[in-house]
Image (tube, rainbow, N blue to C red; front, side, top):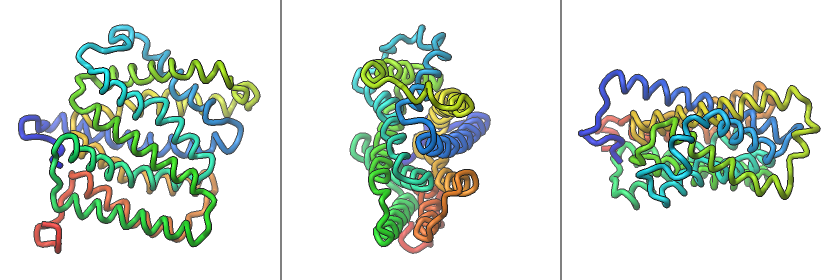
Amino acid sequence: MSSLSPSIRPDRSTLAVGILAALAAALIGSGWQIASRHGVTTSLGPLELAVMRYGIPAMLLWPVWRRTGLFPPGVARGRLALLVLGGGLPFGMVALAGAQWAPAAHMGLLMAASVPLFVAGGAWLALGDRLSGSRICGLALVAVGMAVFGAGAWQALSSSWRGDLLFVVAALLWSAYSLAFRGCGLTPWQGAAVVNLWSALLLLPLLAVWGVPRLLSAPWTDVAWQALGQGVVAGMLGLVAYTAAIARLGVARAALSAALVPLLTALGAAWLLDEPLAPGTLAALALVVPGVALASGALRLPRRSIGCA
């Protein structure tokens, strides 16, 4: 898939902004994964984190969504549903639930590895995009890396399979968001505002049934840090950074930022959460990181490389 058609190639300033946005999205995404794993394994649960992840940005972005409304003009209802499903509360709840059962390194690796596979498949089926040889090689590396990871987890009789499965589902949802945002006509801020507003509204019936008891009993320091990390940094700035990267680089090149996430998350979780790195995870990372970089379409192998013309 060519990430940008010739008619919309960015100039240097647009390209620079897109690259910075993609790097910011990678750092924020990794930080969110580590913070989420810490939150759901200590004093808070997925629903409490979701309230901060979507409720706080919805309040901060009210000047934006007040102008766009619940149904932005020019955005088809089906596309809007995909934006909310893939970038909003359903995605967040699936990922946060998975973090209860699997380490942060699994979250970073499986989500980063699955997104390029799903994006490539979705773009091929829905948009007719074709894959270059380099991208095919990258996707193959990703697939082998996931197989190595799965074999290692199976041999270790890991009990994290429930979380791992949910991370793959979350990646599928995020891929739908990535594809739906391309050409939707919304700016990054508008996209973030609409997604967070709808997510906050979807939270209301859940709160009416279950409430957020841990939000009241958790230490205030935990709540404050998660409110900053989930609500301001991930919920608002992270979504804006990623959608800005898509708008300026295209889906494929923006997805290049995902290559950094599994490595940053694994190292950060080992340092901050004392989560050990299994040999199978390290071997999978060695395959997935370059695989994601190639699968994004932003990098190309030399034409003489075997099988990668």
